[in-house]
Amino acid sequence: MTVDAKKIESIVRKILEEMTGEKKSQDGNHGLFEDVDDAVAAAVVAQKQLIKLSLEQRGRLVEAIRQVGRDHAETFARMAVEETGMGNVKDKIAKNLLAANKTPGIEDLVTDAFSGDDGLTLVELSPYGVIGAITPTTNPTETIINNSIGMIAAGNSVVYSPHPTSRKTSLLCIELINKAIVKAGGPENLVTSVIQPSLEQSKKLMAHKDVKMLVATGGPGVVKAVLSSGKKAIGAGAGNPPAVVDETANLEKAGKDIIDGCSFDNNLPCTSEKEVIVVESVADYLVFYMKKNGAYQLTDKEKIEELTNLVVKAGHANKDFVGKSASYILKQIGIEAPEGTRVVIMDVPGDHPLVTTELMMPVLPIVRVENVDQAIELAVKVEHGFRHTAVMHSKNVDHLTKFAKAIQTTIFVKNGPSYAGIGVGGEGYTTFTIAGPTGEGLTSARSFCRRRKCVLVDGLSIR
Ligand code: NAD
Image 1 (cartoon, rainbow, N blue to C red):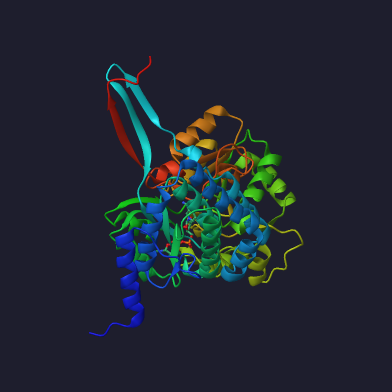
Image 2: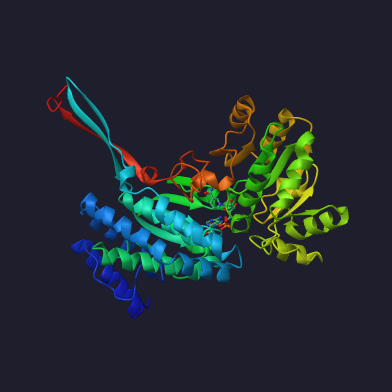
């Protein structure tokens, strides 16, 4: 058996690290490794160093990650659009800033305390260790900023497996986060990745014995993969958010909100409105206000069919059109869109592929129904039980309650654009990992923690 010099060096380095518990500085590395084993080994060392720091110091590292997001929001946005061909720069800047500014930090780690005659017991939120995080192409740097803040605030290190189609952008983000953490006094390699991410590498990461938790943000394939890993896993999967509009809604606002939400980053967010279900008596008014806000209405049945055949392939969104602009998509079917076109809308029946498929592009089918009960029933059906996101425009509290109870989504936005649900113009913190399937919901630092009980018998109760 022949072992090359590089492998010998890597083995020696690992033995030294294990012996000393410390990693030697590797200039030019910045969290990026050829091999998954090396990326995990470095993250193991980094995590051991992280938990030796005070919470105040940990908070400073979190602040440094936020600053990377703020300083490079535009670079990340431009690079992502160029590399993936998806989304738009303006909205991606907003998404990066959102992740940097509204992701909870160490303040999210709240201790539970029980005190009484028998003493004092604490339930503390402790880290898992090394987390393997698989990230999507639709929000590449946003997810890495968001996950890094939450996971490191919780005391973990992270090994990323970024989507190969957003590789360069994701690796730059990981590198800059590393540099910022070191500059802020933290250890190297708190966030790492392989230089050539692939499905193979992703599987290796999932199976690695030193990876104690897996977090998957992506479609059904990757969520199923982490849930079958035999490890603690968080799955943030696909959605198909319906927007229901009833006869009591403020139609002018609903029309604007739906187009704003649907067109955000060319419909890439998993939370964006993917189909509209409207009560027939108000449908024409709603369409009027949607058109006023940049919707282009397709009425020709042949053109609707042509568009459908173009954007839906074998029951899935055609990747060539995911995250493209409305005018680009219209051009492919021979239509020159007027200036200001943001979304393509069309009337279709409820079982149409444009309705049932998660498209992730600004193509928004509209289904007209007789009443709110039919609207709710259809919305529940086309959301496919993903329990992800739903939107309703209504002033009737009974209708709002009925729909929210029936659809059981993690995010339910009332009378606003879908992005209010991730903290843009809506109260509450943000996340880019919305864990419907495994139930953590809007993940934050506390989602990446183990609950540990610490019991002091007798004393310290001052009640
Ligand atoms: P994707 O599923 O194609 O890829 C996501 C990641 O998983 C990538 O890194 C990919 O390489 C990896 N991957 C895919 N299948 C895998 C498998 N079998 N084993 C191991 N790794 C695997 O998704 P995408 O196109 O990047 O993103 C879009 C999808 O993600 C949509 O369905 C969207 O709704 C969903 N999404 C969900 C959330 C959420 O918070 N719930 C956030 C963003 C995106």
